Structures are given as structure tokens and as C-alpha cells.
Length: 120
Image (cartoon, rainbow, N blue to C red; front, side, top):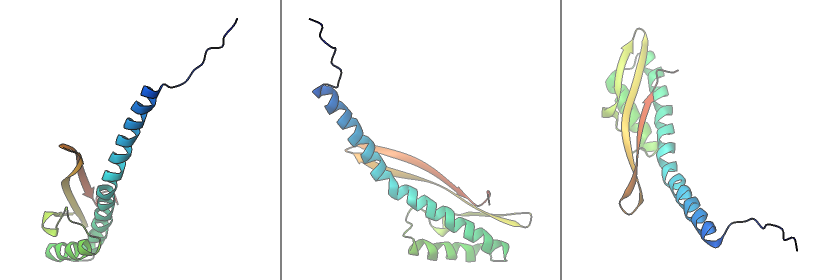
């Protein structure tokens, strides 16, 4: 008798794949708010640089960031955290910050963000 070789995943293999898939999905779901906040900060920094090019002072730019941050529910960065410099006739607004995202029990994910208007 010639038996064909059966291929597949065992029950233990399926459980292991399921645990890995759940952990990856958990990481994705937990990091989405941090990434969307970063994208909002990046957008605001670009707008602030344009305002700075039009003659706004650093204090006005910081207040504008705080107002816009309230609207977009930004809690990781305040206007006082912004680095605002003039590079020739162009205003450059930058901010570096770290966000810790709790995963499971005492396991956390540390994400370092750098938002800048330099690339516009």
C-alpha cells in the first residue's frame, strides 16, 4: 500500500500561531493612538512653520500649538516642548518626545518620535 504523506499544522502549532497573532494584533491596536497623535503633531508643526515664515513670534507659535493640541487631543507634547529656530528666512519647528505604550502586565513598548518641519 502506498500512503500519501499528509501535511498540516498540529493543534500545538495552531495554538502557538494563534498566540503570536494575538500578540501582534495587540501591539498594533495599542500603538495606533500613539501613531495618530504623532501624525497630528507632524501636521501642526508644518502649519506652525508656515505661520513663523509669515512673521509670527516663537511665543505666538507655542500658544498656537497649545490651542491646536487641545483640538486634536495631544497630550504627549506641549507648546513649551517645541524647538523653534530661524534657518535663514525659514522657520524650523522641531520636537522630540518619547511615548511608552503598555502592552501586557509589566511589558511596555517605548517609541521615540521626532517631528520636524525641516522636510517641507
